[in-house]
Length: 148
Image 1: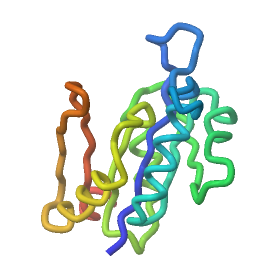
Image 2 (image 1 turned 90 degrees about the vertical axis):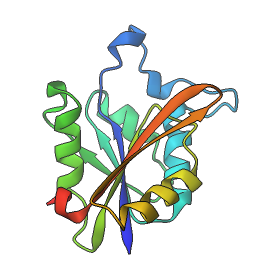
Image 3 (image 1 turned 180 degrees about the vertical axis):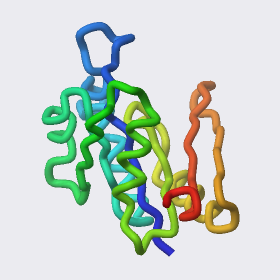
Image 4 (image 1 turned 120 degrees about the vertical axis):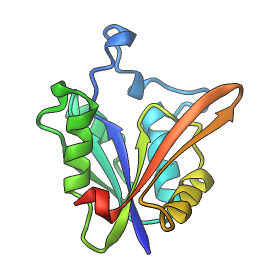
């Protein structure tokens, strides 16, 4: 069973001032978003859909060379719900559902994404809270019934 990975990256990053936090470099030199995308692709649970909005071209550029499909959330200024609507609408029919990951969460591993997909097969929705370095990390997985 395949699950799409929705990487939500449409927000304006207002709390960071003029900088788009998704494009900031980690200690590795890679951007936060590129790290998230690479982990999503490495999870190998299904297609990776990058939902863009604010600074769409710059954000989409972080997916260059990766097996990632960009989906533009035209109504991204309405908030995360608009990003979710755009991403869920783009989930291919052959996917059982989707795992939702935020573009600013580079410490969510491929293993966590695989585990969410596996657990989502048994439930219609699953939210996971784990700790990484003392900070809470949240991801969700949803079955097809919620995606259509």
